[in-house]
Length: 303
Image (cartoon, rainbow, N blue to C red; front, top):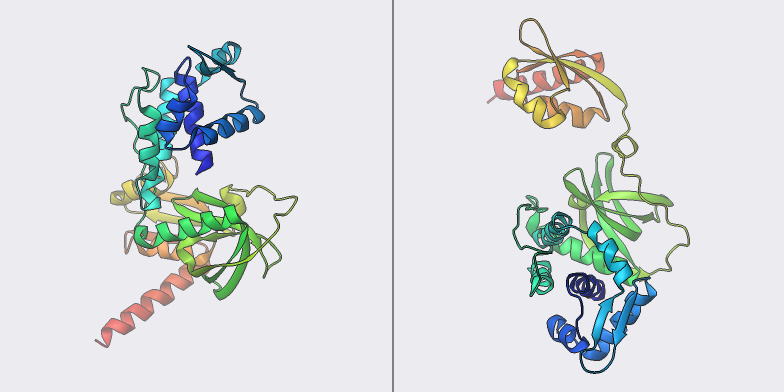
């Protein structure tokens, strides 16, 4: 894709004092004319690139700008490379890794090639997730609406959206766009989407608000839960909520107090602790857990 090539060309120019158009064309496997157009695009984007004709000439970044490149230290570049490589873990191909190899070819100590940060964005749904991400990426680039079947705690619906952003947050992938059913911008979880297809083309809206990714905005609190956990569950609480999420009681048990978003998710989480937790508030959660325990007991009593 063109944006990947532009990033690659800029990285090469930041690493080398000067490079020729034929060298770039060979490295990125495109024509010299394409490289010339890419250089023009970089100039339009505000990158001060200069070219020199004749023997010993080539393409370079102005010296004054080069001083600012110290902001892009070796460590910073390693983080960028790790982030780009991580996309391969969900793309189903080695495209980004191959791109990074091209960028790194012939580089100096500016990129040292030592990978100390490894990021894997894949999930248990990797086989089905990669095609969804590719389909949604294409729809965003081509301004095509998406139709899909959506599963949510409130039921199943058929949705059609104008997609604008792919989001990785809270260990999951989401698509953000304008929902034609609700007439507002919404965020949809990819693992809950099925039968995704491209629909009609659409004109991008003049004003597209950036998605608010604050947890309180996406998952507003509806109540406070208080529970006492057995000491052996400390590692689970720390893993899920951190070392400051509980108070250790004199008997070694752990008092947990935290806001929650909805009953279903809270109850599902509490049930993973079996009898290692006792809820003290709110009464509505206690009643639901009691009902579930009674139903489970009755079911297995009949077996």
